[in-house]
Length: 354
Image (cartoon, rainbow, N blue to C red; front, side, top):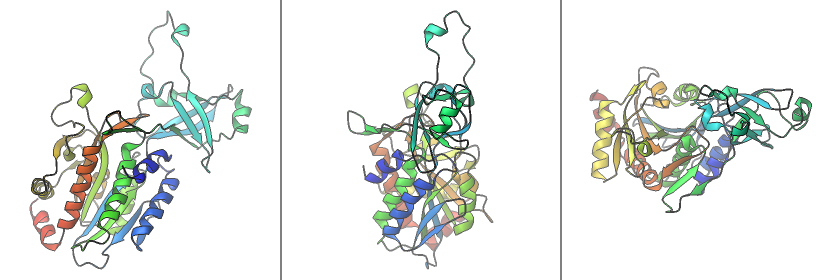
């Protein structure tokens, strides 16, 4: 695994707090292209073959990860927060969390919980909401917490423990959703930067996907793509006896044919299937209850041909998730095959097959 992937998952970056992730993205993108574009929300892309007369193609991960935002401090010195993104409070109970200052100084803590000794004889609690969690940073009281550096509006992120599994084929970390997509964009850019293309390509990452696909809307206006590919991690249920369209680790990239906000363009789906078969790239069909940046970009202007090239991931939107090396390689191979295939002729054929 390239350093991009590990470096990026180790950075904190909840929605609207992506600036340190963006700084990393910009530095790497600038090594491989002189043309860098960014919008006012923070999305950033490198552009290849800008003067092409072929279709304009945009490939995007998203820089934000789910996290919390500080909303106050109790008299006892515990930190209150709200969720930024979809988060199950029970998953984050008794977890090692970090409150980050603006300059990335760490204020470590743990989400407070009651041990069984204090709950015997009590009725079971209702499902815990994330905003009901409190982070204990070891402060004696509210004044002490403030003296330690806690302020309203700071981000709160789980402490990361990136590690490969024993077999060396899988990787455990926070923020695979969606630092995987960010690192993949950098990986593909590095690989194809000197390849002749029949399209103009913008490749990079958006911001604030987890709170409503906000960066996708502004990024689309930045480049006005004809084709948009969202590169995102998607939850798979294979460890819970999921069905055949719920994703499995090690079975290839996800052809996300349906989610509530985007049904894959028929022409693009056929093109992806044909390319994958031709290049013997392993893939699996995927149906989702969530959404990706593709849902927002498809509505830009007179419409954009979109698809999501997905990575199956276990346990996303938690403190740790798991991905498989084979799926990572399949996503990369598919993206490279797609970029090389795009030209005026293929775009017109895809577009016509609605």
